[in-house]
Image 1 (tube, rainbow, N blue to C red):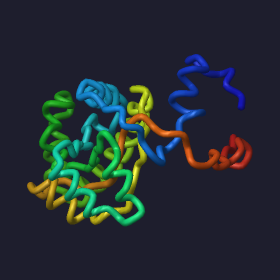
Image 2: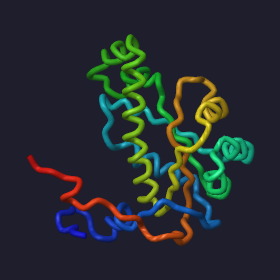
Image 3: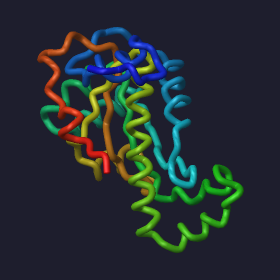
Length: 199
């Protein structure tokens, strides 16, 4: 793998990309609240359109919240959600326009454009929250932890349990912790010439 063109060293490249894996199981090592805050502080920094930052995060800390979340997961995902030291539920805030005056004061009028177009607002919120989910997963890796992102769950049920205001749409559930050894080798990736064209 050619990494000569990077501005970061091989250790950082390995932690963030080349050696990073989705966790299939976690050790008992706890995840500190300071680590969760550090993950957010990193993940909030990369760009979103109009700087809207629509990602909303709920950490299922209590035994009650975790048990209800496990119930909402598909059967294959339940064990890791139950076992992980920390679990984040990632959602898109469909009322993302409300924060535009704070986040992009030079373009505060964008708020009214979004307020008048619910379809545009939802598409914007979902797309940009999805960008932020990628940033969030990279921040987990930067914290020295591993994630197991999951889309198999009863989204409507999770929204009722964790986002009762009704303005968020749940996109991903992410168990987080120190990983056990992977159960299988890394799967192949497409080569450069298979995925990239220059025109």
